[in-house]
Length: 210
Image (cartoon, one colour):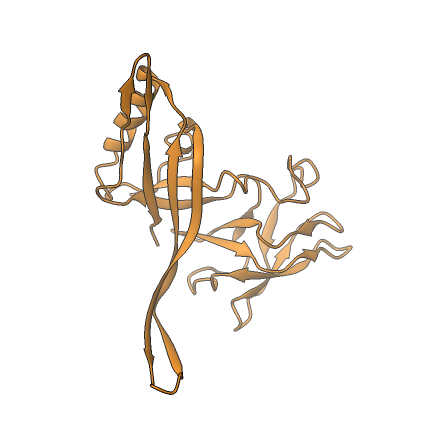
């Protein structure tokens, strides 16, 4: 099943506090003299821990019902980092405008990738988030170094995590409201507690569905 669009869950959330981070899936081993080895067992996955503002009983009841309808971790949905809805140097997205941004030819180092179609001089800042659409999957990455596009609208962008192998050249790049496909972490959903005329304490944890 394809992830639900932003309008299904993301756009209905009123955030109080959010932690958007990476879960690494590594194995460590070491020796008594301090040598340490790290082996990546699986790709790093984005996680989100979201606490919602208090609201009316009906408002939070409706959000809880929509989250239950996801059927645990069976249905994915698109989720934005609320602190990264637009590039930092373009906080309303007006500079980007209607530019169509795509990937250029991807080299063997999939941590530095060419973006094509940017406005001349357009700046991507370390910490900006980027959504890249593959044929059937969506990649979600973070800009690792600040860079400005050339006069021709090209920028080689350092990213984390490494771009998956299924992402190909000419894939569409989303810089306005970039979103990550996620599922609810089982057992993490809190529908909230009624307190007088309001419901408070609602929230959930989510993890990237690769």
